[in-house]
Image (cartoon, rainbow over all chains, first blue to last red):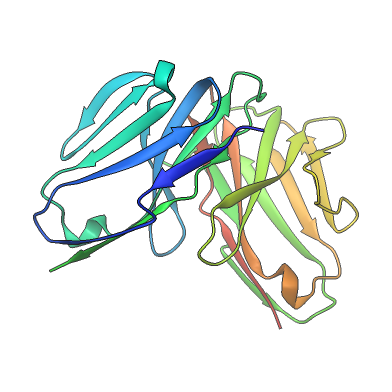
Length: 110
Length: 113
């Protein structure tokens, strides 16, 4: 099946810093989503972005489907941005099944 | 607002108990729902695909007799962990596609003592 790797696995930043999270996937996809998992386990939908670029406030994402990667940018980090960020994909042969990446644990220090 | 509702949020019970978790699609019909499991500090892994009116499809390594899935209506799928043991303690979360993107419930934290 499709493999989804995220980097870095852990990231510790000072409040106000910018960060870039990367998601690499091994096969062509027709769905890619970025999530923020909060301390209670809830998955917060950040972006649906199988290709192209989107922005939402301090967050933006870019997916280059032909090169099989996606990037999540967080600018002016706040402590509430802390948590685990997952990308998840549906391969073109995946029948709507989402395969989650390995995750990036982000810690923002005041 | 939430489009997928999952209950209960927390379950703590004794070893040997069977536990039922519900996943409901709100204001839309879902012929397919997905059940995921997440162990501490790990990613989410798909357990099974719930199909309305037919048998669930389980991923490799998931015991179908232990994790019973019923998708009896277009808005409700249930996951029953039968004779739960401490190693079944985990975070279980469901999702339902409403076109794109997929929407997730808030998850159920299961602790077996």
